[in-house]
Amino acid sequence: DHVLTENDFVHQNNLRYPFEERGLQFGDGIYEVIRVYGGKYYLIDEHVERLYRSAEAVKIEVPYKKEEMYERLNQLLQQNKVESDAKVYLQITRGSAPRDHAFPLDTDANLYAYVKDLPRAIDKMWDGVETITQHDVRWDWCYIKSLNLLPNVLAKQAATEEGCYEAVLHKDGEVTECSSSNVYLVRNGKVYTHPAKKNILHGCVRMRIEEFCRQEGITFKEESFRIEDFQYANEVFLTSSTSEVMPILKVDELTIGNGEPGRITRRLQELYEEDAGISEDQ
Ligand code: PLP
Image 1: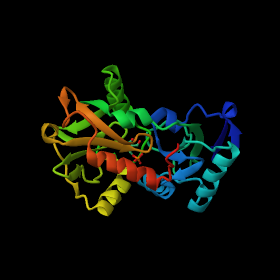
Image 2: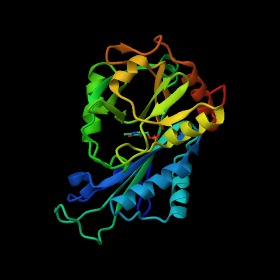
Image 3: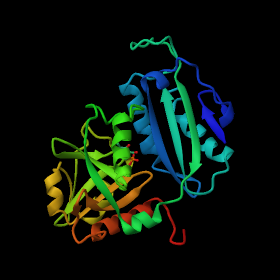
């Protein structure tokens, strides 16, 4: 119930925003979603680094120095007595000013962060999920984790209405990522994913997947692939802080491989659990 703001902790019901708030009017802000397992942050450094990179890219000044950010984020878990699996949502907007596209340089950023329980999607990770494809109509700077999520929202909604878990996004047939996750194709024992260019979000879990592959001697190729390539895939999976490593069994009407989660996907799931310190009995 305790929400962290740029000044202090407030109860969620007492959170107030000015009517000319740039986050509300322009989506003028950035955010992070950080995973918590057993009351402890996972990949906190990666998320904090990306937050500051996003902020710099859009010229927003983060209200805290990095050191204080860590301190406050830890306090957020303590204040709310978090001991289970959860997620922390943190956003920073440019603040409030008379509405104008151009922004004054002296507005004070608004920050808020809260924590919510989030049980792991064990069943879906075991069974696998289905997806649809959608045109990636987003802008060129998707590496910035910005609050402008309308294309992502509409793509995920389309997937949901088809009874699917995610939308695989593509630009003229070239697969970029999903609406809120990164996507990978496995063929002949090699893992392919779109290069970490400016047109995708550089997922924190994606960074770990690269590392896991290195450890296991699995070739990790930052090489984009096309929608048509899914027919030759042995495995397909997606990753994110909330979905972890999720097997994809279908893309539109196409069944991937033999229609079951593959060996490499399973191995990466194990490595994720080890890395995140998730114990067997959880
Ligand atoms: N791609 C997009 C568009 C996302 O919104 C997300 C996260 O929500 C990801 C990828 C995965 O990023 P991460 O692994 O840091 O959660």
